[in-house]
Length: 327
Image (cartoon, rainbow, N blue to C red):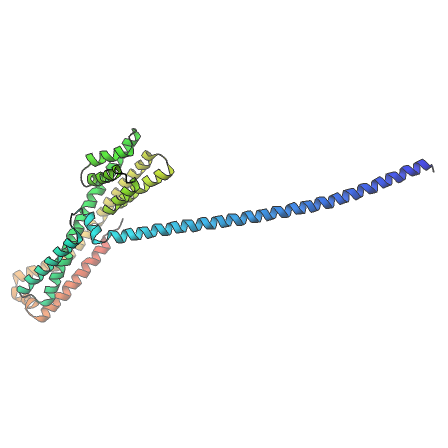
């Protein structure tokens, strides 16, 4: 064999061996590099997932804390709204709580004295003084509050329509509130006038509406304040939002009237059942006084009258709870 051929074959063999070595080393290096990159990617992915879970947990905690604060504020508002001072403000009475309490005590003393002079039994004297001093003034106060809130609720949807039309024609919100304050009937005119006066001296609108809710704690005012606060923080079409609110309020009003119509029969039945014992007692007393005299002159009759009166009060309150729907 030729010497040059042998040298060529040997060189080709050496080149092949070197190529195999280089390819094998590169493959191991590439595989290790791939494993390294894969390991880094998995580490980065796990870190990203962990950070995402931590972020979601912190956001959940913040939302829970915010909701807890809102619930606490609502509870405080409800407790404050039930106080005597707040109820006097809701009725728009310019009477201080101390003066109202003094008047209640005077009525209790006068009623107790009159019943005692008339010779009524001690339980009747105590009950009459309690009703005259505690029940009657607060009943009148509650009636005034309900009457004022009912008028305000009936007018509120029309006020929202005024704001919607004003905003759509280019008027600012403050001018729309001034129109309601000057053109609307009472009590809505007074409440919006106070909002306008508060805003004119630099009080923010949300604070004015919160004070308005304290004077008029109705869901409609709460809805209105919520819509304005959301529009102020996130923006949006105020006219469209208030138009939707007006439609909701009118639908709510229709639902209230429907509920009243459906429950009218039950209310009438409760009134008849509650009034029947009193009417029958008065008629029997007129037609046969001697038959009813023992209920007023004997101890057993007076005790039976007290028991019957307590049972009547419990029954009337129970029926009232059954036929009054909260909406």
